[in-house]
Figure 1 (cartoon, rainbow, N blue to C red):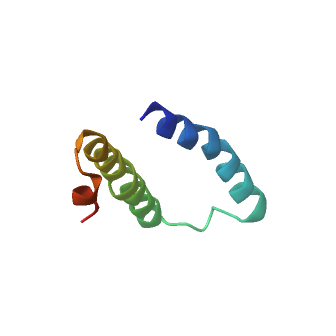
Figure 2 (cartoon, one colour):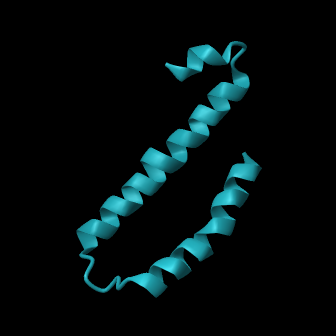
Length: 66
C-alpha cells in the first residue's frame, strides 16, 4: 500500500507540470474541480485501496475480481 501511495505522489508533480505546460486551467468552473476531486478520492483512491486490501486478505484472489 505504501508503494501505491509513493507511485501516486511521485507522478503527481509531473502530471500537474505537464498539464500546466500544455493547457490553460483558468476556464474550468468549480463544478469541474468538484467532479475531479470526487472521482480522484472516492472512485480512484479509496476504492482502489480497499480493493487492494481485499486482494491481500483473500485466500482465493479470483473471488475478489467479481
